[in-house]
Image 1 (tube, rainbow, N blue to C red):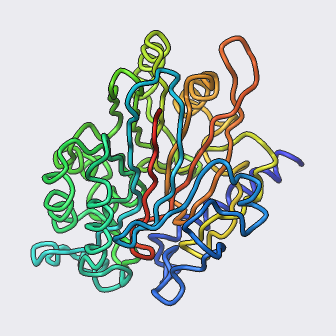
Image 2: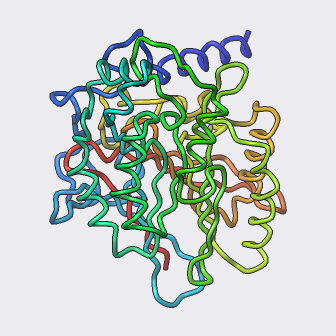
Length: 370
């Protein structure tokens, strides 16, 4: 009965989150302009203390508003190596919505264009430019998925023009929106997922499945796709077979060289901790995600195949993985993934879920590594 209840909760969570590109819900998971923001804080200029959830974790981040209007969430990680600090800026969930005249010859994209009204005609442009202007002085920019609202020549061209060309060192994983052309449209997909993933591969700035980079002999940044694939039971956030050995090798390298590891992916993973079965958002972008269950939702201890292997690699290296960063929920959350050290000691990996670029004047997370 307990297992059945857990499965039912998972299915309910899945069905809720999949509405972002559903034809059954005309609004999707993104609200219109009048309901984009319901802030649960009275001020975003100091460490948040205005709600019980925030005060509990007040030491883990601060909010500030950049002069451009971008809401910036700040955290600091100690590498133990000293020296000059590194800065990494995370952005997420840009959702570029744009079709060219050529795209509109495709019945799937034409229907998407006619029905997908949120951020239509690249109206996220100003927020995106503000966020990138804020991020440009960082040592590394990472975008955690859903850069595209759907796959079209128009969205790929805008991504190249505004992100990949001006910021050639950016690291960017896929989300659940990149591999689809049908997004709230009425016409079924007319190309295979294999064809669509190949198009993404041909137009992405780096490998779409896995990418890692060492910064200043101090920190290893790992960017992994866990957004584009759905498993046989409809679970989002699953990992790929090809990622297992790459991650294993990078974690061994990081351990041997004393690097702190930061993981970036799109869909949050399970905390494997029941105390996170109902977490209040600390900053609400999409009011539908003012609270969320991080226990039953997402890849976790009950996963199988590559997802289980990746998850076990993560949770069994809790001493060197100092943060996991993602998006997908269009609101800010803080959770801790139950983890272990190599000798079996208990620890946690902080998991930060970031609000998307489209909300307010834009959102960013600044990670300082001392």
